[in-house]
View 1 (tube, helix red, strand yellow):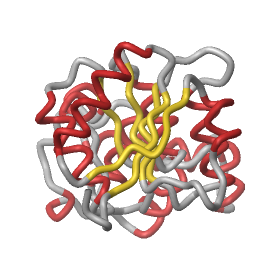
View 2: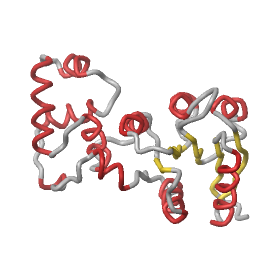
View 3: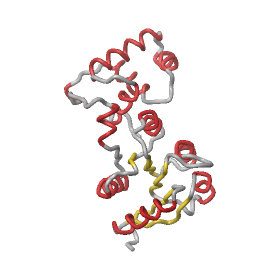
View 4: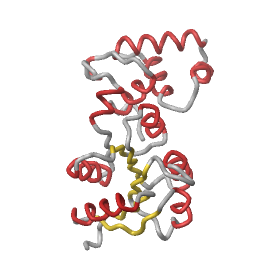
Length: 213
């Protein structure tokens, strides 16, 4: 194993599935699994500054301590560890929650091995990986690129705030405008970007590097 191998931790309560991932990762070459865990709580007990991976592959649905709660804990305690979420479902709200938590990758559990390898490679290189279904289902297949759409300073400010945990009322307070004005910014962006939801706005901001994770 090369000395510069990317170190990985697997967190999934389905041991048979986890075993398959171990075999797949080992077959890719430049990766080293330093330990495994059945749930987020076990992960928090095993992690330490001395035993810390480059990437954590995290199941979203687990008993005791699930993926979202674990990702929140990791963001607070080990923000430098890149996280890839594994999920059984194309869940828009969970994807948005993961975007807000700075998760670097999101994969469906039935993804092809080649897609898994692509995600792992990108995240290991400091990039992000969200699969096609995110764009297809959540961003409504953008028909225009960011370069061709002119957003004014206030619209950009609103777009960045919309990708946070703030409510629309809190965004209005942050921007020092009325709630009605914020509704106007939202509706203008929905029309300009051909997006129908706040999920889409957040993912548009990520896709076009308007916010960093």
